[in-house]
Image: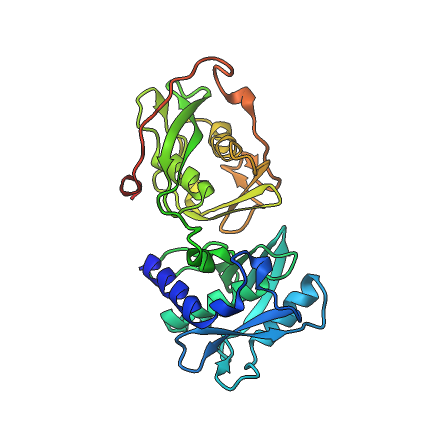
Length: 326
């Protein structure tokens, strides 16, 4: 269903606003006179855009101006506010390229198809600013969860428009290095995957899902519980932000707390663009993992916990198919 909705969004953009986009990166959405403000048509079936020149130049004042403007109708008669007038915006916060917009509870009453258009319009509008790469949604300060219970993570513009240019390659493959515990559970051990199909997911999401799924080989021990749920994972300014559900604090692992944390950190840090990893639980990093390890500050990789560094490792050359990940 989620994939069908994404196809619907892409089809809407292709028919309705492709002429207004000169590329698929969020910086290319700007009109020559300033910004493109995104609206929904009166029938709630498609998105359109109009040129808009903001008064504010940057920062929180600009974000507030754009959100306030999104509550208004466009200059063209058919363009209505993407955010229904009865839905209240409680506020927003900005952290390291991520804007989190907090809505009142009646946001959940928006019709499902219209909600997707609303969300797309907000993301496409806000990510035009220099400071914003991702937009996250919360409802009364709780992570946004769809009717089927699925968490909605932070989104970027290309989540809605990349399919127009074929950037979202569902057949994409790459090599990955994961870190599970060794057979004794005393150290981390490299678990190498070659030519792995990770589908339409981000590499970060694929890595976390594989850690939750656990190793297939007997000489490795899983570090994360299969009951753990990933809420979101995004990377900005070389910091990867990983948000888990409450199970992260309560589920018991077969290995030490330190190995759990650095199984995540070391695995993600194998991606060139990631230098640090910030872990949170339901958006809150002011907690301690199992009352032991503070999550308040980002972690950097720790190779001292990895056995046989520099020696020949036992590679797993199995190709994991997308169907295996479900």
